[in-house]
Image (tube, rainbow, N blue to C red):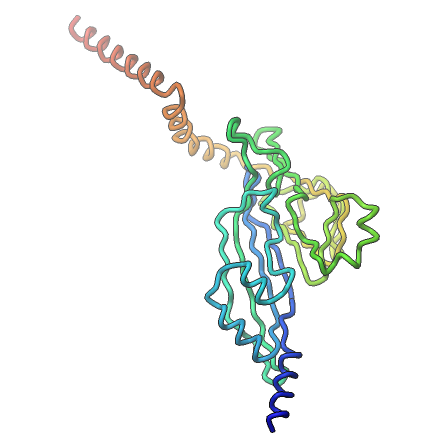
Length: 285
């Protein structure tokens, strides 16, 4: 009897596993400074009672490194590189197991990560450092911002894909993005977007540039070499007016707190006092 129980335990452990069901990286809320919000949905199939108990034990753990170690899955990670982008506001929310199948002894889990990605800025000039951030921006004409995807920030290819494409990588550029068949990279574009240049379209859509008919693009099961994505967004006149008046208080604050702030305040006070004095003299005359 003991041998049978031991055998059953060994079998249970052998067939216990974490398996990637789907990893979706969604980029939205793209801003004029090139920053954007990124949400990653890592869906996992958990097979076996042992692994399901491990998952449940870690449900209150919001440390990404611990979840990567617990599951042993390469894609339990951020798919953007913090070396080339300033990652802020990171949150990780493990979801409870659901859609459990007692006959197959499996459940579905999910880890949701969200964060904002910014370019790094030069501390002296306050300008964004070239090659950092998810998008490079150029406000080359009024009310219009042009965006170019910075592929150096993307971090999709993992060790499990390397043997499959080794021969390709030896002859291709370093700017090769490998997206596995279980991984999806999706960009949701702002309103009034015009796609200007796209070097490789997703398999399920045909894009003829320039076009304003695209609201989102999603790539999966693809090797993107020398990948280029350029689009522009034109603001409405109403938006420009609102932005102008919204920025006035910030500009005033920057002037007051800057190197010439005290001198500026002094000049304003002198002009105000002079105006009041002249008005009072007019009344006396």
